[in-house]
Every structure is written in C-alpha cells, then in structure tokens.
Image (cartoon, rainbow, N blue to C red):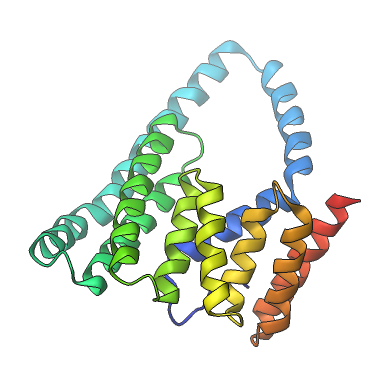
Length: 224
C-alpha cells in the first residue's frame, strides 16, 4: 500500500514489500531453514559440492546480468548530474537508478558478493537522495524516498526523523505514514501502530489500504 504508484520509483515498492514479507513470515522462514539444513546434512559431500559450485556460478551470472542492465545508464546519468548538480530532477533520477540497481542485486540472496555490491549501490543511492533532498526539502516525494533510502542503509532513526518531517508538513500523505510505521515497528510498536492507522485513514486506493490493514494486523498480533 505504501507506494504512490504515480510518483514513487520501483525500488521503493520492491523494498517495502520485502520488509512486509520478512516481517510477517520471519518465524516460518526459520522453520523452513531448519528443515533445509537437515536435508542438506544428509546429502553426500560430492552432491553438496556440485550444488555449491552450481549456485556460485548462477549467482555470478545473475550479478553480471543485473550490472549490465544499469551500468551504462548510471554512467550517463552521473555525467548529467556532474554537469548540472543543482538539477533536482536529474539528481533524483540518478538516485532512483542506483536504488533500483542495489535492490536488484539484493534479490540475489545466495551470494555474499551480490549483497556487498547491493550495499555499495544503496549507499551511492543514499548520497544522491540526500543531494536531491537538500536541493528541495519540501518536495514530499523526494523526502519520502530519501527517508526510505536512509532506512535501507541502516539509519533507521534518520529515516524516522525525515519521514516525521514529511507527515508534519503533509499530514494526509498516506504513503509516508505507512513507511514511517515500518521504520518504527522494530523499536516503537505503539508509534508504529499510530502511523499505520493514519496510513489507513488517509489512503484512498483500496488495494493500498488493504495492505496497510494487513501490516497493522500483523504488527498488533506481534505486540500481544
């Protein structure tokens, strides 16, 4: 629900959904991991070695494919930003590109190298989101994306602070109310519940509202 489909980049949709699914299915995932570990322990060493080699090769191919999709566009966009560093639209576009790049690499979960590269791309994205935000802190969409970027580089408190500023100026901005609830959920569930309730209150899209309601229900359940 949390994404304004008309304005927010694809990476934000993907990353927030990752957060939701991770939150809802965390305990189930642990159970599956235990089963998988048990199965692997009973496999022959040669089979395990072959599987590991195949997985590594597959991951390397995926990394190469993802990088080839974004590298050229990133170079071109960076040249434009270097030429016009105060062009908010150009800077935000480059930030979104690196965010999508990092998120795509993040999906390659069986590779440490992919995760390392993903972190680097998301850090770069955060740098450009900050640059765009500094150019116009009152642009609610840029500010919202900057908050999400902070969250995905590990600065949860920074993400909360920026998101709170956005909803203070734009109290009916359901997208950022939802995101704020996600950011707060790990450390302040009572505030997270309030944020999600506001997201539901102000959301006008039925599908998005339903997603917020499901996230709120999951959060309340975990609080009991």
